[in-house]
Image 1 (cartoon, rainbow, N blue to C red):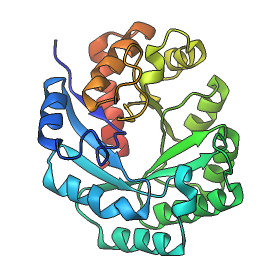
Image 2: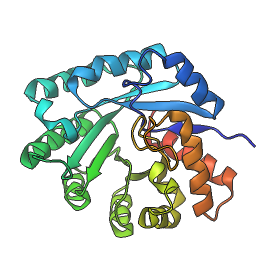
Image 3: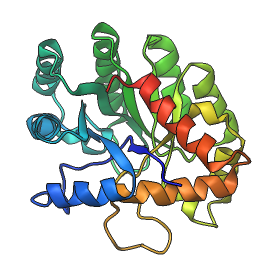
Image 4: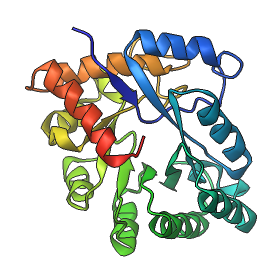
Amino acid sequence: MSFTFYDTHCHFDFPPFTGDEAHSLELAAEAGVRKIIVPAVEAGRFDRVLALAQNYPALYAAIGMHPIVIQKHDEAGLAALEEHLRQKPEKLIAIGEIGLDLYMEEPQFDRQAFILSEQLKLAKRYDLPVILHSRRTHDKLALHLKRHNLPRTGVVHGFAGSLQQAERFIAMGYRIGVGGTITYPRASKTRDVMARLPLSSLLLETDAPDMPLNGQQGQPNRPERAANVFESLCELRAEPPEIIANTLKNNADELFTF
């Protein structure tokens, strides 16, 4: 039985996809991956991500300012973000990748929190969902989300926190991104969380070219491998594969306006 998948998080504006877009999309389609959301990480990449979405039917854009490159963000970047949102490009469907990160050296956390807060305000103003990054910051992120109370909510992508942290996000209306971490047998905590959360709260993603799957360490991740993440999820869940596939697709359709 063949299924339809959406990769709700793929950095398709980076190598190895750059210059190989058409072939990469063919491979994804062969694996059943029909739609791919491409989140930008900084203002300098907004135009490229939007152009990809315009040029390829399977691609959809999210634009935002990622905490991992906090040193690149400034007021001009926020102004550029709002200008793009004001213009309402047809296939711009979310603000992302945005969030908080305490894993890196010199996180400039107060600056991160300011940049995140400004982007959450824009998400509320322009009625768009958010694609959220969080490493070692789930509780802090939850406080930001509670304070801003977005009507369209969003997804906490690449989730690797506790069951209680996931349930807190879900209680606020957020989805949880399921990626390649669950393909690693040693990732028992994350695998257990994804087995126990409501299926209605989950979204499928790869984070390609990052987050390689088990057995593919050292290789760039790719959007077609969303199908492999799905297979691992099916091993963890009690529901039949067709129910899992249809629910994952419906969850994405509910959150994003494709």
